[in-house]
Amino acid sequence: FPVTITNGGVVQAIELKFNLERNELYFNKSGELFLFNDPVSSFRIKTKDDNPSSETLFRSGYPVHGKFSKETFYEVIADGAKFQLVNYRYTYASDIYVYGSTGTKKKFTPAEELYVYDVAFGRMTKIKRSQAAIEEALPDLRAKIGQISSAHKLKLKSDQDLKRLFELLNN
Image (tube, rainbow, N blue to C red; front, side):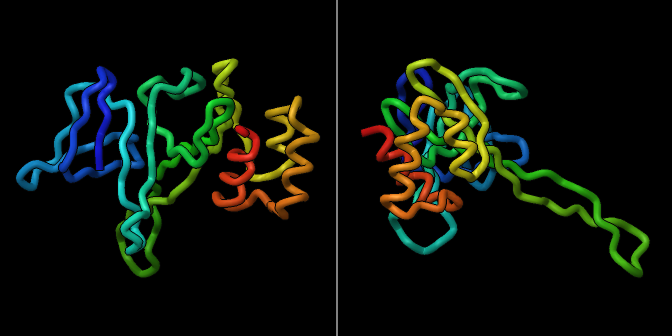
């Protein structure tokens, strides 16, 4: 899958690894992992299932907000000219105590933060997987969001439902 560099270059035919704990992209060369020298603007990776067309797009370059910089990678769930739905996926490590053992084990827990990116205003708004949260993030579209959700029976809990809503909002 191609990797797009911020300066416009494209790198292809390399094996990628994405570290969710550190939000870093690596490439594999002769069995060793390396960081890219130039800033990466987007990349696609194959997801775990066996479907060959199953891939996930990650992109950086979104506005600086909170603890996130322009180099932070977000999974793009829905891409559009007006609104984009992006997901900051990460893992965090915690120590767990094993009964009957003297030591601890590291446990990596996956987590996510969803954001609506309003292209016109260049603004990121954190949301939850609910109609109310999306309506709060996009108050001018409250009625349209309600109509789309009802007409298409969208529960807005899954990535597929959220993607469908944002595809229709971008039309």
